Image 1: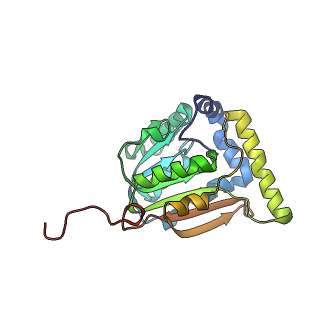
Image 2: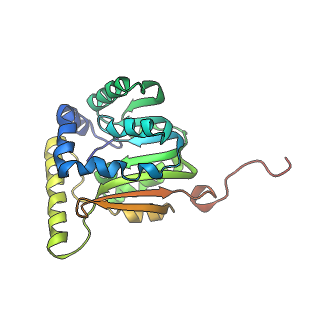
Amino acid sequence: MREAGAATERTARGFDRMAPVYDLLAGLGLGGRIHASQVALLPRLPGAERALVLGDGTGRFLCELLKSGGAAHAVSIDASPCMTRLTAERLMAHGLAERATLRVGGLEQLGDERFDLVVTHYFLDLFDNAELGGVAARLETALLPGGHWLFSDFATPGHGCAGLARRSVVAGLYAFFRAACGINARQLPNFDRAFDAIGLERLADESLGAGLLSAALLRKSVRGERGRPPVGPTPGA
């Protein structure tokens, strides 16, 4: 779980402390399937000119995105200065520094910029349902008509023993990150409802880790903002 928007200073400091071992923890978690969920649908991307990546931690996915041709350039925003520094070092090591812009903070770092790809891997789980609607709407505004949204996060589908086991794992993760990093969220928000509210079309889904992890590729309507035709010159003008 990562936070790159609406972050408190305490949460940023918490992730700063975790930065040196973040990749190790992520690799150990679920046998590396967390990273696998982040890249599962990467081959489905058509190739973006400009991507917005939120809460990528030490930049592992960002490097994969740029190396694969999933984006020509990316803006990466993270609340943690230490995570951002490690991302810069990773980009330099891979010769990708000129293709990325790194910013420390949250969604306030966005101006009137527009992107044809938004990436939220294990970022939206930091918001409750009341907050998530506003976050999703803000990111939808930054996404160009016809642009794609790449998403992965935890999931707790099902009932019975399997569903209970998934919910117990997620509850334990929230307890850990609340203690270690001072996050406010206590449970997963309703991602599907947030995406439906802003009118995204779901193109592909992937389930990993015995249903505990979910990845999705979504697309914004080519007709423009929330189904309205994009503003442009009239024919013959």
